[in-house]
Length: 263
Image 1 (cartoon, rainbow, N blue to C red):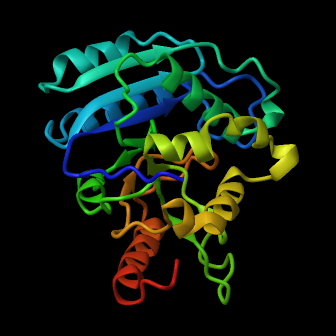
Image 2 (cartoon, helix red, strand yellow; image 1 turned 45 degrees about the horizontal axis):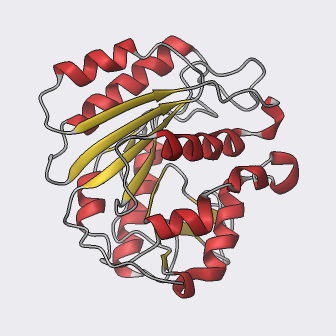
């Protein structure tokens, strides 16, 4: 496999995935109010627009519920910035809700990359769940390795298991890819992510990327702990509450003093 070299100090592209209006009957979705979700997306877009322009050059926002994007257009026009911003919407929820969130989100990613007028093959892309704010995304980008096809965060703690959170798990809320990584591991993967086939998409990608790891230029652990703000969709839990901040703090320390423990 060819490994393309990048200078991660150059500006990158941010891809924000969105479902403003969830389909009726969407399973395991507590934060399902369209007005609340739209407010989340507006707040997140406003945050990412304030990131340095010489670090984050492009923002591609993709909604798969064919919802009105005028509120997001207003945010993009009012916040001072020099970024290129593209808002895309389409009806991508024409499948049974039982297929699961992973199916819908990765189908959305394929659609967005195919239809974007901003993305180029040489771009490094950072994907975020669009309602969430990765408060230290600038630091994540700055500390990323120079060469990778996939840069992600895997959890693997055999002695502890699921006691401290999901084990054998890839955090799909934020990760990055090169064009080679997208073509090899992401494009058309949504058909494999039906809940009835694989269960959790996070566990599917953990197994896939841990297996290829260095041979596929997969960097399986972020160098710093992501700091995420917002509300989880499944349980409507605040990612900045006391419990999550404790876990985040412990993971931050372990990442520094014992990086071989993938907590």
